[in-house]
Amino acid sequence: MDKPYKIPESVLVVIFTDALDVLLIRRADGDDLGAEYWQSVTGSKDRPDEELLQTAAREVWEETGIDCTSQAVHPAVLRDWQLVNVYGIYPQWLHRYGPGVTCNTEHLFGLQVAAGCEVRLNPREHTAYQWLPYREAADRCFSPSNAEAILQLPRFRVGMAIQTGGAS
Image 1 (tube, one colour):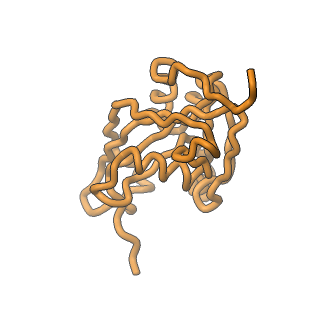
Image 2 (cartoon, rainbow, N blue to C red):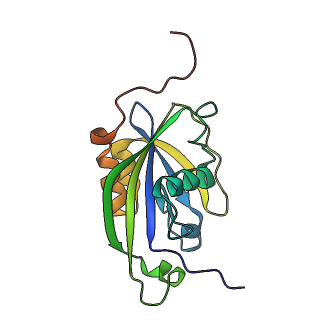
């Protein structure tokens, strides 16, 4: 059975700490091309009526193992930045979309997590991760829209530090 075409509406989730360190993950399919494609969490809707917040939380879970819906497990704040990018799909990934689809609409989210948050990659999708100061992370991204989103981080970060559970 053929895999259904991807929906050309996606999320980009910048995962960061209070210190503005950003999580980057390396795409597994870049390894086949001899390139290192570092990025934030991204992913398309599973169905046209899927809520964007649901897409963002699902993609974070699938790609990093961070459950941003369970505050007891991973204290986190997922926030819709209300920003949208429309961009041309990279030629090497056009085959994943229906005939004639050349652009994707990407909705930006931020996810603030506690420093030291555990990351568990899906090895079919990503082969490595790193935490970098936000400017370095932006420089490392292969996608210009991802780099620009990361550079917006000081503007959109949640004002409160994440509580890690200890007494102060």
